Image 1 (cartoon, rainbow, N blue to C red):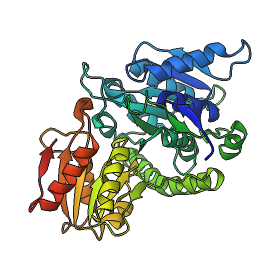
Image 2: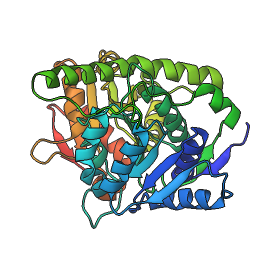
Image 3: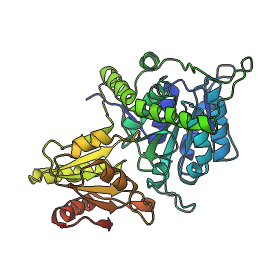
Length: 380
């Protein structure tokens, strides 16, 4: 086996930005994404004067960081920024601006609780962005994170898409944990990812307005944005296929694990899926027909892939590391709307605010799912 580099999620994200020939990185540091900011700052400082390829500067707030990112991207400069939890929430207004201006910038989110006093992982922050017009990927390991960030630029900059992208990693479980990561060469990425060429951008010699129209024309604009999001599904598949041919790694819109003959399926996103796989593997040695489905792409929502994957199963357990108070899990609502009403589907709320999810928890979820006679919502 060829040995890769031991990289934390933060290190992988910075390397991906470098390999993608990012030129501008406006930042506002917040725990736990401050490690990315620190590493970008070190990278900027290590460059020789007059030969700096990446511009780095910190702003006074998350809103200012995204505002600067929008301005940078609008001039045709490939731009990268990061956020987390409460910072991501404060960016919401400008997230609609970025997608409204059809700007293909990329932002990494290090998911954490939205409580200002809880810095630990959950997915409520990233999933609360599902209607902002941004493409959303939730990665499960640091290799996928690095690969997805690079792919995200190629997807976003496609003329049939031109939408911003959020790439998510779990706080601490990915951001501060080192894993074996195979890093592609700069030369190979230069061949894979062409230079940014915006069809319309800010230019002082040709002034234009990039804001969405109002009144009658606004609906037409939103329809175009909706079509671009739908176009992205095919582009994601094409880019993933190209990546696989070059680097022999393929991800798809959803990940299937032991799904061929599964009658019981656990659905879970993010790094918890890696833990769930160990439970599924153990159950398989006991001849239990159980599988795992991991939604990797959240927007555009891969409804057809999910429906196809779950069409022959008996029971489904959707494990949500998020909550809509008064409604339930966010992923559960999306999964439930994507499958036949005849498929038994229960919701398990777990891992909020960094509460550990262990292999034993997934074993217990499976046992409860098998024995349940009616669909239920269970808090672990």
